Length: 147
View 1 (cartoon, rainbow, N blue to C red):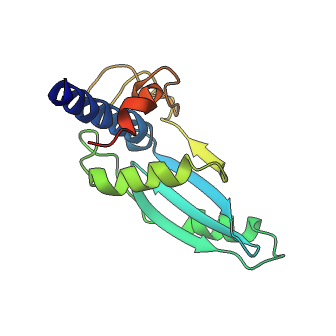
View 2: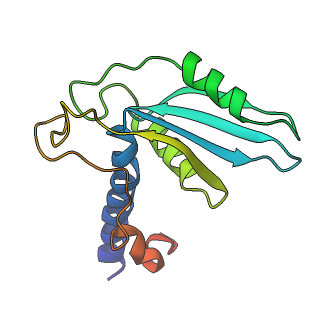
């Protein structure tokens, strides 16, 4: 039974990683913010699952000018030929954890343009920026169990 539990845990961990990473991997542009412990904001720009830029604002300062600067200066990441071609799984997983953090806020999300709407990178349906509620993460008892 222990061997089967380990195998199930490995499968669920892989599925959870894929479910969390895919929305970022298929998103052309996302800006997210998280309040810093002593005030101010941490900001990240994610493009096609890759960290395109980051910034920090000072406590008490309006973050909107910094957001505009980050948007304008973030690295340009061309649309990849296939999902994940421009980044590593590890990088996208870290970004997904950051964006999914309870204190994080989505500032901007740009989906595919109208010409590409309805098409994924492989030609199927476009993925919306969403994380499945009834997915692998619902099996927390197995995932969080000691191996």
